[in-house]
Image 1 (tube, one colour):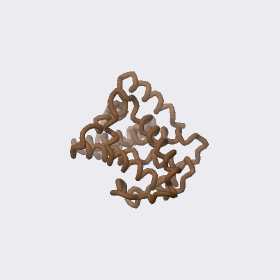
Image 2 (cartoon, rainbow, N blue to C red; image 1 turned 90 degrees about the horizontal axis):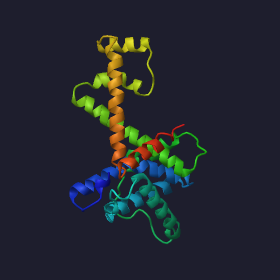
Image 3 (cartoon, helix red, strand yellow; image 1 turned 30 degrees about the vertical axis):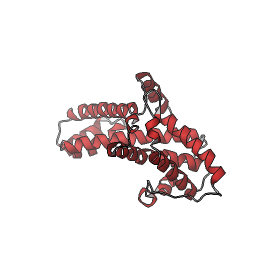
Image 4 (tube, one colour; image 1 turned 45 degrees about the vertical axis):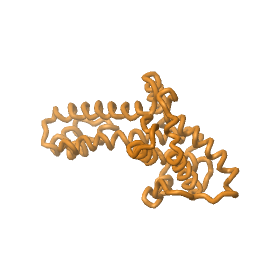
Length: 224
């Protein structure tokens, strides 16, 4: 994640664009929770990300800067504070779009967000944590697809978040043509690997091992 900063080479720009696509939604949720209408939230998020790419502001990031989450939210808050001052004087939406809102269905996703009495900052952190977990799950799925084990992953995925009982494990064993004892072992390994990938995803957004432990503790005490 921090490695996205640096030169304006094609690989660096591709990494920055990947970051934008991975973490646009927590920013959008923050803007909406701040009271922005859907169109304004889209404009603000788009312009903020476009500015990061155009001016290579990711290059300011280094492993001494700490948590990428905090940096990104702070930068977005600073951007929004300036946005109010120039909103009437300057047309928005100039430059090359970073995101396709029709493709992302931003407001459709936001409409599914539960009602919340939390602060916009806490909403941002909660959605950030979920985005990390979604990215980790996608990596885990891809690993199983690459090794020809996607059907097994899809059958056992539900046990990542729920404890299965004996009857559920037996049914899964029948579906996968495995012995009953093989399913708990497979689920244990699946959970271990998922935890490793989640840890890897978070590690890309922090500066030091101490930051990693603190960030993990913070993010995974956020969920209700």
